[in-house]
Image (cartoon, rainbow, N blue to C red; front, side, top):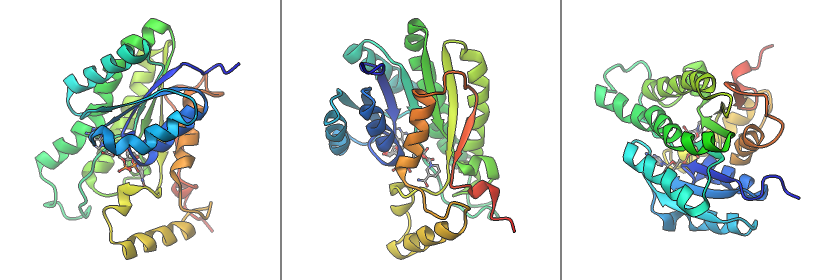
Length: 259
Ligand code: NAD
């Protein structure tokens, strides 16, 4: 008997990278998945097929998490299709690439655009999904933040600040939504997904992958599956008493190499 069979997970950014890997891992545990993405559902077809091949039902909903009405529409679509929501994984995000010491590289609108997706988006998705979780008496939210939000590194000041804010919000909502809903976060380090591979030239990206292998205690570049494993732990397995917590999934990058 699979205790997770029939549960429902809503995964934003589910058409790609860490969201897609999380969806597949959850599907392997018997969880039905709703993939939410800016991209049209045809772009999620491979992920949907992979999830369905695990024996679950899978649905793609095109939505922009920065738009509150669309977040509400996602929660409604999940309930119309499955009658429940057990898990929310907030994976969708955006960035602006800008050198940290170039204070003119970002204007107010850049900050607002990044915050709208990376911080307001998860808030709106949690608000839209929380009533269904509360009604069931149990739910789990996982916010995908970043080492950028802990260490003050990454693609830009706006991005790092948005991810730091998401960690603060994780703690606050863990307290506010307890005892029914647990809220935790995962902070990936550099992971091999389209997030960076689509931004850099193949040569530069290859160099980044190589340097990741020598700049962290666990001498490997991260894969999406590593983050998906942490998501599954925080949603399903062995984490019943854990809320407001952050798991660093970065091969120990935040520790430095010491020595
Ligand atoms: P990705 O580019 O593969 O996937 C992100 C997905 O989010 C895309 O499919 C995109 O269409 C979707 N998206 C973007 N804006 C959206 C919006 N407004 N509404 C709905 N969907 C939207 O990237 P990824 O590596 O899978 O990144 C997932 C998460 O992991 C992000 O929160 C990112 O900040 C975080 N992260 C990634 C890395 C890394 O190295 N890959 C490192 C640290 C943190």
